[in-house]
Amino acid sequence: MRSLRLRLFSFLLALAAVVAAVVGGATYASVRAEADELFDYQLQQMALSLRDQGRIADDERAALANPQFDYVVQVWSIDGVQLYSSVTGQQAPLLPPRAVLGFSNVEVQGRTWRVFGAAMPLRVIQVGQPLEVRRRLAAEAAGRSVLPVLLAAPLVALAMWWLVGLSLAPLARVAEAARRRDAAALEPLPTAALPSEMQPLVDAFNALLGRLAAAFDTQRAFVADAAHELRTPLTALKLQIGLVRDAADAPARDAALARLRAGVERAAWLVEQLLALARAEPGAAAPMADMDLAAVTRQALADAQPLAAAQGARLQLDAPATLALRGDAAALRSLLRNLIDNALKHGRRDADTAAQVSVRLRPTDDGAIVEVDDAGPGIAEAEREHAFDRFRRGEASHGEGSGLGLAIVQAVARQHGGRVTLGSTPAGGLRVTVRLPLRLPLRP
Image 1 (spheres, rainbow, N blue to C red):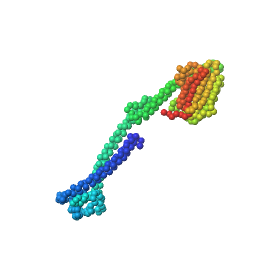
Image 2 (cartoon, rainbow, N blue to C red):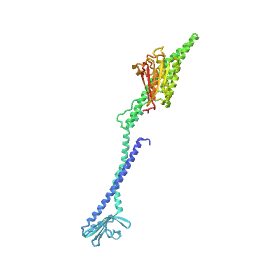
Image 3 (cartoon, one colour):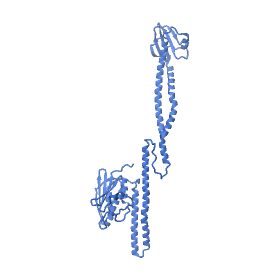
């Protein structure tokens, strides 16, 4: 049963049926009990109505002797002589010749009678009625009292079906509003006049639409920026290919080939950075697993060692032997590599000063902290807000870069539920601090 309306209707109908059965049963039993009391009252009143009569008139005799009359009346004198009986001859059975005062049940020829006996100063009166007749009349009266409930049941079922549909109408309106939209329509769904039970669902769906809209905007900006950034190195490669082709001699050709090789390496690095950033985008699937962040940090330093050696830079590492964490080892390695590369490329005050990069890794109660310090000029506090923008290069940067390093660092940190902050070292250089949780937070 996949229809919510049908499910609610079935549950309500079952509940209504149980309630109707209980109420109908209680009404039936109550009416039967009241009918029994009423019949007992009639027996008593009939007996008492004959107590003061000296004789029973002929019209009364005819009425009491009517075969359709359900009662049997017998009257005795005080000395036991029968003065009257409403059944004679073939109309037997007679009630017992000795009356039991008050109400009693008497078995006569296989039938149970309800009998009332009353002793008067001059006579004894006994009035009886077959018990099955009483029960039949009581059942008929009780059935008539329950009949309106049975007749109203279909109308109640139709009303419940209509009310369930009316209650689910806001859900149908929200579904229709979502159905009419195309892939580009990511505006929030209307929330006016929504039931409180539906409000959290629609709010969550609108939040999802907001995240999708933000992700699409980010992707569009990313594609536009990537196209712009790739256009420059590709144009340079075309020019360098022309220079190789037009080189006049071998030395000129070798110089042109060297420039072409450097241009290809820069383009390859830019593409690699773009792919790393795309893998760290919100919503991108990442193979999260238990890992050793200390080992990943040492691998990132080993990857950066050739660049440090080429620049005559010094790399320092302060880390425990192991640090267990759950995350994507490749993405965190990329995060660390970008921090170290940025520190090596931009972390010196002038061209004659060798870069010094210090990497510290320490555990905390709820995760880990990675700090990367350089000896460069740092980033002014006013510029730190935009330092994570894509393709942004600092004005004081030395060397060439893609402007994606810190953007990748921030994306990977967010992917792991962490955060990145920029500060200053005591010597005035840049300190990048990355805080990572031990476990990934639940996604909203």
